[in-house]
Amino acid sequence: MINKSTIIYIFFIFIFIFMNEIYYFTYIKDILITSNWTSNYANLHDHLIYTHFIGYIQNGKSEMLVFGNNVGIASIYYILGKIFNTHNYIDLAHFVNDIVYCISSIYVFKIFKVLKFPLFLSIFFTFNPINFYFLSLINKDIFTILFVLMLVYYLAKKKYYIFFLVAITSVIIRIQLPLFAFVFYFLSEYHKISMSKKMLIVYLFSAIMAVMLEHTISIISMGSMGSAMGLGVTRIIRELNINYYIGSLFLNPVKIMQYFYDYLLAFKNIFSQDMFYFYRTGNFLNLIFLPISIFSVFVYFTFNRKTQLPKSIKYFLLVIVSFFTVWLINPTVNYRYIGIFIPYFLISGIYITKILTRNKQ
Image (cartoon, rainbow, N blue to C red; front, side, top):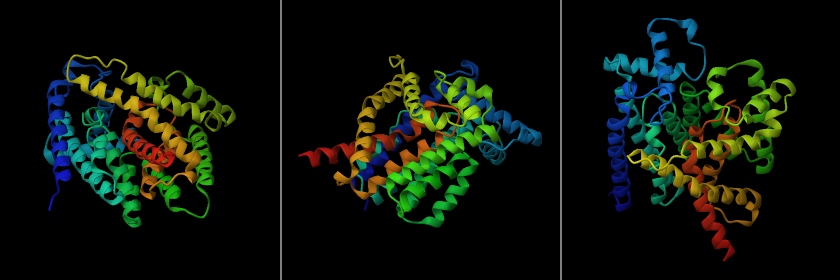
């Protein structure tokens, strides 16, 4: 029998989908006519890149299909376009993203049941305001959310074969995701060394991989990196990696702060007089609670021997660590990546703050 909290959860999912429909027909459906490449309502820039790659696939231009993060998502939509006999990728993406959102919501429910979290905290996933952005046009972010949730669920259930199958499959969406899964598994399931030593290992691993990336392959062109260089910190790190091999090793903590700074800048204009107001204001409210959550997580990792933390929360905490370990290898900084993992920060922070307060009493 479905209990009351489950019914409310399903109701909230439908409410968000309804709001997203309004958002879609107001801002997205005619975005190619009303906006340019720098639209704030959706990631139009990447959408147009993916449609170009779909064109390469259609025209058999294999020389343009360099291994990277664009080919997989373009291939998926090329196949779906064939199945549904359409070249209207804006409407197709809207349909696909809504389905992926619903599947993600199912996994959120399953995770909360396995980890015994209060279901009301799931609102940070289902009503994450940046989902409006992720549910618009062709993008990898909504799929990334799904794959991360699947990895958390199957690792929590100790279904390792399915976990690694999901990890391997996720390379279609982002080549970082299998590496994320490996780090997540190592931190969570390898118990022969202490957590502090594992943290040191993954930090050094991230710094070394960043240097190797700079010297071997270029997943992201310098043209697209230019808009993500922020205050120049990432450019400095890149130059130090290329010339002296030490940029990521010493400056990754600064790069972490830049992720949050970029997230802040993305929502500085929060007083729009339209539905976009909810999108910006909701993310602004996330920013208010985020420092508290980050501080709580820091306190836990610093003084975890003194806290009685439920073992289940470790998965959310280690998702955060695994995210930074892998995404710091990426030469660029973009607030979207933080947006994907905001719910893990907030829920971890709330849980740990509650425990720290209880222990203090």
